[in-house]
Length: 218
Image (cartoon, rainbow, N blue to C red; front, side, top):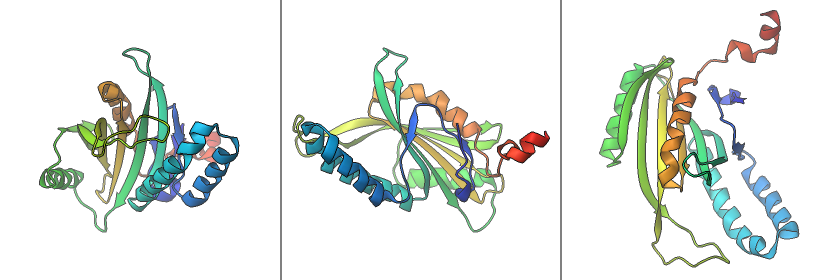
């Protein structure tokens, strides 16, 4: 389906298999879910509920502060072995005070990543809607201990596969970022085609066919 995110001024196609998480009214939503878990969840879920939900709230509030306009969690069957794998999908939008050459926007971004010491596979490509930068890497992230499951030693980290797509607007005054991450690192490359398709469909003006009246008038 198409998620226009009209207030943000960016339109992007969200693939099937993703469920949107809230980026507004986060505390209220998490509190409501917590009550349901307490009342209806089995003992092991209730025990882990507070830890998981508090972490989720911090995660979503951080995304909202960073101008995220969409966050979703997906479940898909791996093409490698039919294993059920999970991933997160985040779309953010930055706006700049002045217009600029889109290629210079990507150049500045690439230099900023290099300056920050971020290492990964970088590809600058021309899509039907303009230039885009792809940045792929496997990074180590803390693996939290979940109550009721095995206890991890302090400092234990797990590999997470990430792919980012950066798409500037034609005027260079906006930058959309699409990021997909999965803890199933060996399955990560399967998401490449999905992200390229999403990046190719990014637009910064409302599509004509999203207007019901325009569709009726042909």
